[in-house]
Image (cartoon, rainbow, N blue to C red):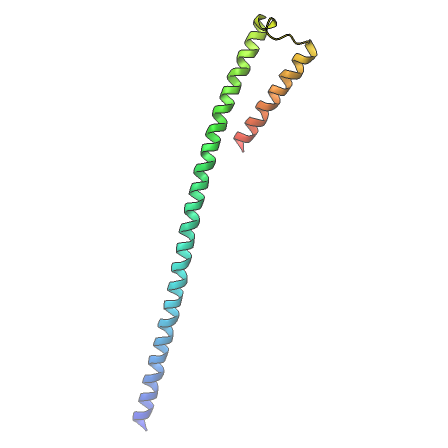
Length: 113
């Protein structure tokens, strides 16, 4: 009777250890899968960051180019040398200047986002 009781306790104990190990193994597998998923997601996000940074650099360069062109046109207009190549009425000149300012403003907003 005592031997049978000890055998039952030993079997229960070993089943309990097996169950605990099985649960531990399952949790380790789940953690491994989660880690792998997070690493993949991190790689994708890093790639997207690089892409966005490249677009930002391109937009900044474009803005600098547009700003330098605008500065040149304004300089020519203020010197009066552009009158021979660009003949705009006062209202047209204001409209063009406003459009250029609007484009610059939109680019600056895009870059600051």
